[in-house]
Length: 278
Image 1 (cartoon, one colour):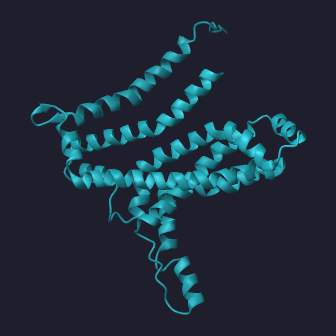
Image 2 (tube, rainbow, N blue to C red):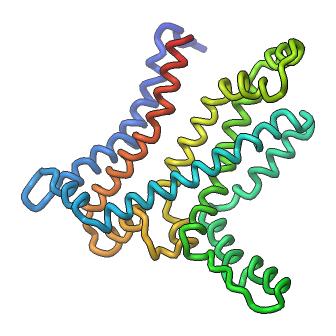
Image 3 (cartoon, helix red, strand yellow):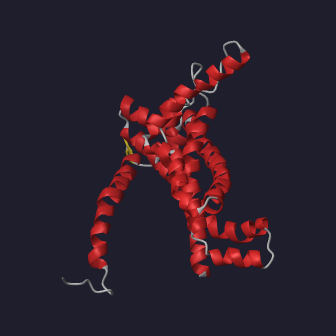
C-alpha cells in the first residue's frame, strides 16, 4: 500500500474542496446572482425594495429578536446544566445523563414543535392541569404567541449549547482545578477564574450555532407562533410557493446569510485571538 507523503496533503484535500465548491459555493453564487436580477437587468434594486418594505424589515427584526432571546436564555441555562453534568455527576453515570439530555432531540424538529403545540393548546396538559386545580376551564393563551416560539427554540438551544459547553468543560485539565483547590481557592473562584475562561470557546460555538439555526427556523414559528407575525423564513417560503418570485426569495436568503455571518463574527474573532496568544 502506497502512503501519501506527509508534506503533500493535497491528494486528500482536493476531493473535499471539490465537494465544497459544488455543494456549497455554487448554490450561494447562484443565490447572489438571483438576488441581483431585476427586470431592468443586474442591480441592487431587490435589496432597496426589501429595506423599504416595512413588513419585510419587521419580519427580519422579528427573526433576529426570536433567535436572540432564545439564544440568550439557553446560553444562561446551559452554564449550570453543563457544570452539573461535567463535575457533579460521577463519571460512570455521565453517559446516561447525556442520553437523557439529548433523547428528546432524536425525533424530528417538526414533530417536537407539533408536540409542544399539543401541550400548550387550551386542550393540552397545562390547561387541563390548571383547570383541575382551579375547578373551571382555564385558557392558557400561550400557543400562537411569540412566547411559545421562544420556548420551542430555547429548548433546542439549551441542549445544543449544553453539549458544547460540556465538551469544553470536560477537556479542561483536572490538575488545574485540583491545584487551585489545594492552594485554597474557593469553588466560585475556580469556576470564575478557570472554568469560565477555558470553557468560553465551547459556549461561543454553542450560542453561535443556536442563533444560526433559530434565526432561519421555519417550523417553530409556524407551529407554535401560528404565523400571525411571520418571520423572514416564512415570508421567503411563501414567496417561493405563492408567486415563485425567485429573485426576491433569494434576496431574503442572502440577508439571512449576512445575519448569520455577523452572528459568527464574535466566535471567529475569539478563536483568532486565542490562536494569536498561543
